[in-house]
Image (cartoon, rainbow, N blue to C red; front, side, top):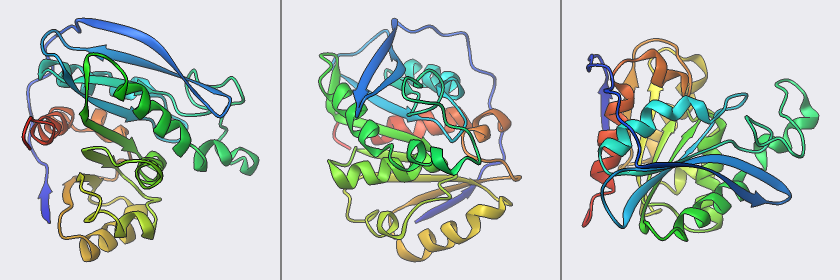
Length: 239
């Protein structure tokens, strides 16, 4: 297991453009999940990354990361999970309302559906797909892997709700895993300790401060590019 503390500044992202950007819809248990599919200029078939929002967040948090990925020839699907962003045809998640919890803890079917969508796209290599999940979406991504098939790699940003079952499957999943957490975030200490103790293969990147989930990408210049570089290395042909 690799541990690293990120303390670096990387120049701001150049104004790159995607070869194409399409609004897409993925159906799952009555939900119409809305996302943006971005394809880079070069490459075919392409590796791809599915990006999942944190609670009370939306897919816009990943625009910068999607551009860094496109610069490296990697497609991306930024998805609004049930009850978030524009995926609200059956309701909207409201923090603190217990009746809305299924929009959080029953999202794994939507993750499976989004991965299946990517796997059927003509320009996407179904063997080279990764997932980025923020906060609760980290557990939903891991559970989707247990229910269906694990993706090739996972980046979990502040996965504070990660279950014991998910932690115990890290080393046997066949996937590569990167956990990104902030050093002083109070809700991540137990999870980080459990992952450290029970996994030999997970990589951990610890950044300064108390930031949470996809907010880390905005708070730490260079982090989005660092994540893109890690994903590029894990989605390379032959890795």
